[in-house]
Image 1 (tube, rainbow, N blue to C red):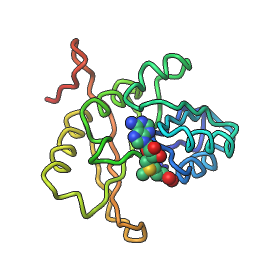
Image 2: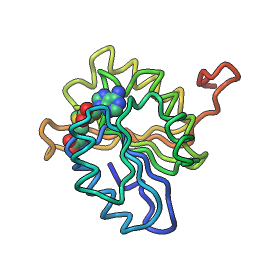
Image 3: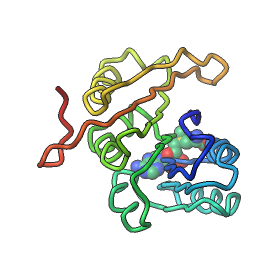
Image 4: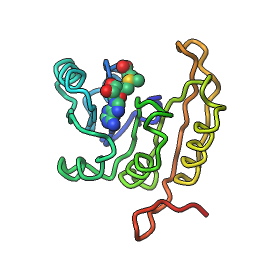
Length: 172
Ligand SMILES: C[S@@+](CC[C@H](N)C(=O)[O-])C[C@H]1O[C@@H](n2cnc3c(N)ncnc32)[C@H](O)[C@@H]1O
């Protein structure tokens, strides 16, 4: 999930839905004090706990779909990496969220999102994965990580397509 975080430079990293902070710790280790790391977490308790545990992280307690305006407020962007811990089928695969992520990423940016293997082949999940491919030029799906409980894959999306004038992401 966090291999997109560059090991050099001063990257801008945004994490969506940090929960108990497993990805947060991994991102912080990889950054080693460089760049900026913004967490957008809707649950106030999780947001407060992550902020306490990671003073270097900028934590915003908001809905991730508002990402473009939240980052503008913080003066962050364009973003190098978006790491999403959001539930894929319930939320993160929805067009408004994918559009928000595509809008804030730099042209060379990378977006990682996990999906549980057992839900992947259901019609809604397949539709959502199609939406991801429309919004990004390249989407690579990793092998199943069986050690995760439940087992999961990671979608690694690169090169966001530019939004049309009405704000909708359009494929070829
Ligand atoms: C599956 S959990 C995150 C798992 C995380 N990797 C961990 O280590 O705990 C999903 C998180 O997304 C948050 N969330 C759900 N919908 C959200 C939204 N619309 N905006 C921001 N955060 C959201 C939830 O509050 C929850 O903390």
